[in-house]
Amino acid sequence: MRRAIALAATRVGKTAENPAVGCIIVKDGEVVGEGVTGEGGRPHAEELALDQAGERAGGATAYVTLEPCGERSSGAPSCSQRLVMAGVDRVVVAASDASPYAAGVGVARLRASGVETDLGLMSREAAALYEGYFPGKIVRPEG
Image 1 (cartoon, rainbow, N blue to C red):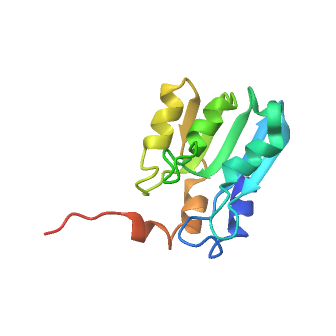
Image 2 (cartoon, rainbow, N blue to C red; image 1 turned 90 degrees about the vertical axis):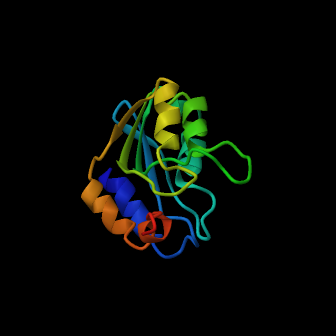
Image 3 (cartoon, helix red, strand yellow; image 1 turned 180 degrees about the vertical axis):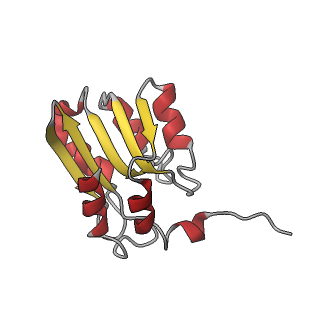
């Protein structure tokens, strides 16, 4: 996760309205894929890491700094769907997402598909990446 956080830190402030996310895919103790959110917010880190890992993603563990998106406004497969389709066995997430396109949907999709999903590894370190992102995404009740 430390490596994923370091990758994400290189893009903070360069990903438009999207958060800077880092993703590392590990299989049998070897990094087989890594990605960071592209400048302007696309592509997502998970997409790049999965593309790099290819078939080696099957049975692997993905370390992601922020909950994988659960839906895409474009209609393309979400990052959580892509992780499932790639056959990733386990996803470790540092921080939950407050975005309406994730907000628990990504983790729920992973778990419903049988992917072991852990939350909170290095959450404090990851939270520092998203200080400017979360306040704009959290909906507070009025009154």
